[in-house]
Length: 303
View 1 (spheres, rainbow, N blue to C red):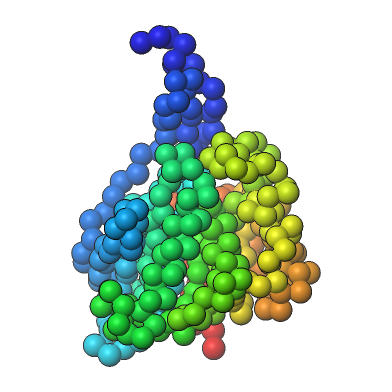
View 2 (view 1 turned 90 degrees about the vertical axis):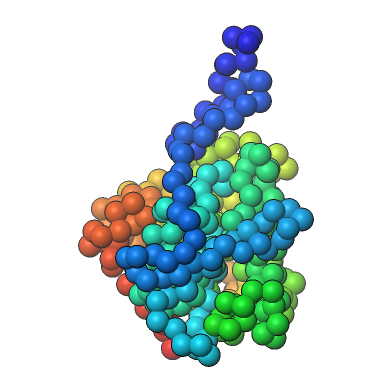
């Protein structure tokens, strides 16, 4: 092999590096959890095909105690990972959603959008949107997935994402408003430690999304320049940031943008002191993680 092919031309730790011959190498290797019964929480999971044409899948989480005709709020989750790592079936997502489903008494579905750079952005956005459209087909109780037909209250839908997933969740909510998506009602949006670019990560985003300038004039990196922001289809938003997270300023700016946008809903802000980016996914039993989880649960169960 030509040694020049081993030259690293892009390096974006802790996500990926790119070699001169076009190969990519991802720094983090994820562990996966098979669908079935979670012994710790009693949560049942099932993997479903959203679109066989593109291989789009999702995982559904149902709490331990649910009666045959019981309808629960539905949480639609978009995992983080810089748009290039992570999955709806990895250990981190599984543990987080199993805990949230148990504590909030909701059904959750994690959309397993395709990852960049193998599938360049905006494919992840389009997959995530396709997932919500598929969910909406269950509004009459005749959709393709019985768990959603039987147990999901599509009049009480929440979108949630962490990091890159928070970016995706926001844009899906805006798209739902612009298109006036029928069949479900998005009550709330949980935006957790959102990735809206900044510093060197703008260059990574530009690599993952070749059609993007990678700068603040891209609405996907800067919601303040999105002319459709006022159309966002939800009633309430909860923005989470962490004090030591280098992305905190972008999260604060997002909150302030919503407050001043004329969007018309209500927005809350929750900062965790002394913690870094997405700490709660990797240390879920610490006091700050439990406080963050309680805030999520209270937001979902707010009447």
